[in-house]
Length: 216
View (tube, helix red, strand yellow):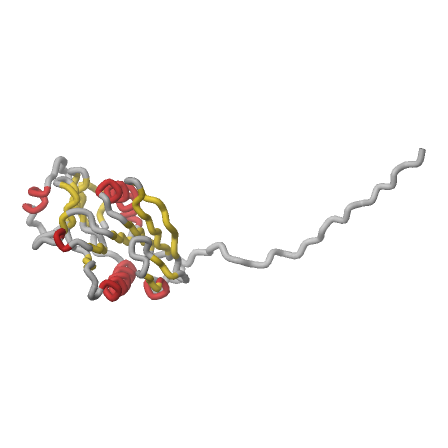
């Protein structure tokens, strides 16, 4: 997740990124540097930890490996990101300092501060870079949107809520229990009235009046 305000630098490259020695964290998209936002909310971390745990359990002993932020992913010389979660299935992409090239799966847990960044900038970047599958996770209202890459663009495969079991299109045997993912306490004043099944009020049907034709 990143702050909406960009660092006053353009034309940034991988070499620039590696030379920054401050304590802050950065992403670079199209040569523009973006400062990572302050510490996320506890619910963001709760969702992230549970997703990471279920992904690690699924991929344990398999060729694919799960990585958690902060892990640098170099998509090009001017595109370097740190997704919340990623899955890499080609060990040649794993270097000592970063992941080289597009992961098979990227997961971003969004907030108000990162909404446009994750839904617009990174959405386009991941598709253009060849990330096969992209999940956008909204902690509340509970929602995971799953996008699959098709001919260079993302297609929405489905949206999954707290009562659902998420099945990945890229990894068909991967099934996530979202009741565990979204298991955190809400504040008293933030509950959203959602659309749900209910019984409508009683009503009467209007009887049709019979018309008797007039006699000639």
